[in-house]
Image (cartoon, rainbow, N blue to C red; front, side):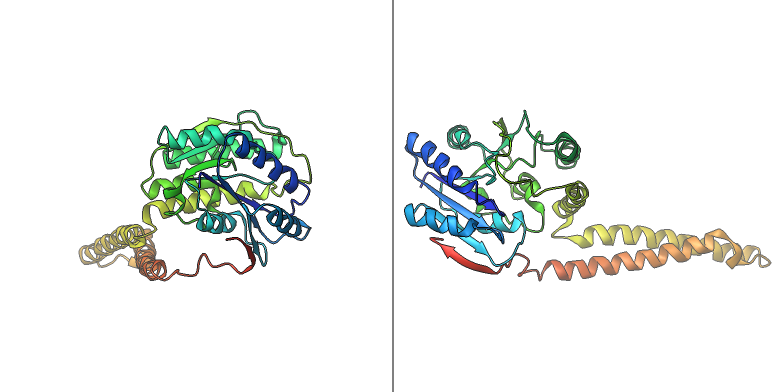
Length: 313
């Protein structure tokens, strides 16, 4: 199969028929074998009924319906598991991503050998205050921390070689940083292409100002996990040992001072509290690293989702 298109959605019933028709037109014109995998992330409108209708009409349309809302990362992870195409695309269901971009993105994967090609919404049709400004900050921070130079990490339109999606795991709210996750896994040829961005035609955006804070929390998490996810003791153990040694040396200093000057009171000196606090912090960090090691080895259920129905997957 040439391409798989994974589309997570939440309450996008109005957009789905038009999006399907657009993808079908592009695939037919370029003679591409395809599958469209809609991931219904707990919609409360008629989205799933429409997906069922499209699947009945075209067996290339497949669907996964979550029993409740799990978020975009969970939807993408399940879609990646089901995808069979040589090139796997992700796009949003709100018609803001253009299917006309698919052939060129596929060519970059197949002919130029990219592992990932990320879309860049160079000209946006979003609210400047609530989406553009936070995105610029997120992208700058992500470039600095990851070493991956992309203008738009959060663009929903991306193309992946099949081997990438079969070797990465997306969980929590890490969908914004899939290129970073792929880089950890050894897929380093990551490109970018300016893509057409459309104004939202139906409904309202599902994202607000809360993603401004969540994005930075996710970035902090992904930066830590990328370096120490498999070896948390290397971080906590190192800094715990440093803190403990500072406390220990301060304690030796106090003991020697007491021996030289018996009239001095140890507990009235700032170095006593430095020694006490740093030793306690050091022990706590060491224990945190030990517990984190145990947890990191027993997280088999972090990507378990209750799926209500499947269509063709």
